[in-house]
Length: 118
Image 1 (tube, rainbow, N blue to C red):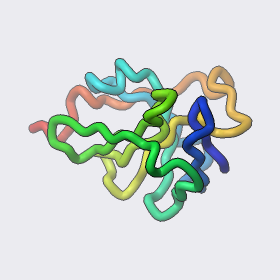
Image 2 (cartoon, helix red, strand yellow):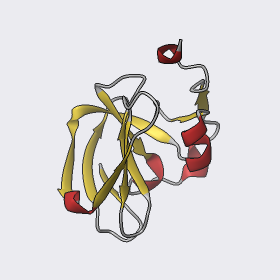
Image 3 (tube, one colour):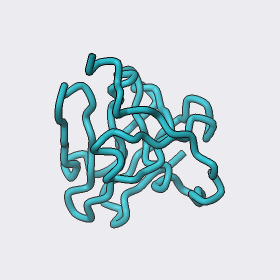
Image 4 (cartoon, rainbow, N blue to C red):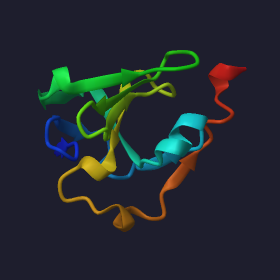
């Protein structure tokens, strides 16, 4: 599948791990503010086709998760997961042909009580 940010400066090609069945939201402090629905992609199944130099990076707390955004339009594109560092979470809203309301209900993950915080 193809994914793009809002302005089109960043373009990704992804092969979803289990289609849209992995769609989820997280309730950690960062994800709650971001509000995105993410779907899973194995690290080797994401290619940045365009705009790698345009991506901005954000990491916090344990610095295990790495969040990427378009530095032009500000849209979150993907992140390397803290829950599974061998996967990316892709912003499902950026995937071509996806309309987020069609994914409802979307499961929530308990990021506030992450096992790595114990």
